[in-house]
Amino acid sequence: MKKSYLFLLLLILTIISLFVGVHGVSITGLLEGDEIERMLFIKTRFPRTISLILAGGMLSVGGKIMQHLMQNKFVSEGTIGMMDSARLGILIVMIFLPNSSVLTRSLAAFVFAYVGVLLFLSLSKVLPKGDPMILPLTGVMFGNIIGAIATFLAYQFQVVQNVSSWLQGNFATVMEGSYELIYVTIPVFILLYFLGYQITIAGLGSELSTNLGLNHQRLQWIVFALVALGSSSVLLMVGAIPFLGVVVPNLVSLFYGDHFKNTMGLTAIFGAIFLLVCDIIARVLIAPYEIPVSVVVGVIGGALFLFLLMRRKQA
Image (cartoon, rainbow, N blue to C red; front, top):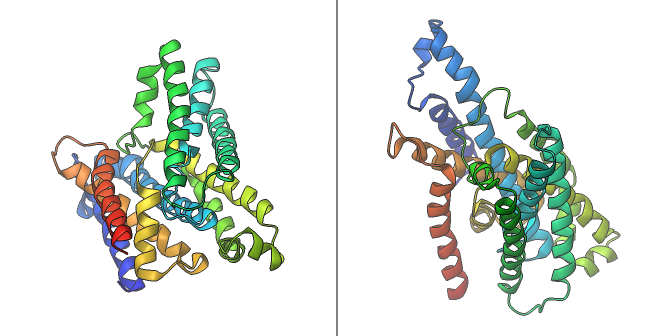
């Protein structure tokens, strides 16, 4: 697909997202000054659509970076324990600082996500290098251990219901005044873009990138910190969204190649398109009721993930 078509598709889906929902919002109503439609548009539809675009782009680019730096097509924020670590951080704050601000929770999510990915990086150095599936499978088990700890604490302190409410990816509750933290992803995108050339070189491997004058380990620490910051802000605002960081980067690679610097923007756009489509389906499938977008992403993303696995096997 031509790049211009992707931009056009993103624009069309953005417009659809702004005007699809249980309560009708129309361009005519907005132009005529209908107060109810104007309030719905400003307070719910616009925040929701912006959140979808930023979340889809951040999780997809984050997955692309993980795959590039770790030289493995099946790793992402969700398969190396990063998101599970962030959830554990939020849970601990909920237990011991129940009246804490969103900023405190986001800081805890970032710190735990960053520590989690650094721990997994250390673990990955002692894993066998033969089969590329060993790394993501180990990451899933690592994440499950952290998730089990979080579940135990949630039951122990009787906050299971509170935890389950934000674990499931859902944009229905996104409203003006409660979603703005997701704008953290914008400076994260900008910084990652300026580091794009170094990230591309780092993907060649530690030895080769060091020979080219790059401090590979320091770059990893900086880049993973940025990914942890962006991803944890998405988790805190809209919950967990499965498969996005694995599927989208692989689909982009199929069509546009593996050069990170050249495909970072396309990966973000593709991720935003994918999440917008899933969210629109979630809103209209059983209207006037709504399915959590994580369920739709899980079904479609899971099917695409199986396709990628079978394609790898055939190759």
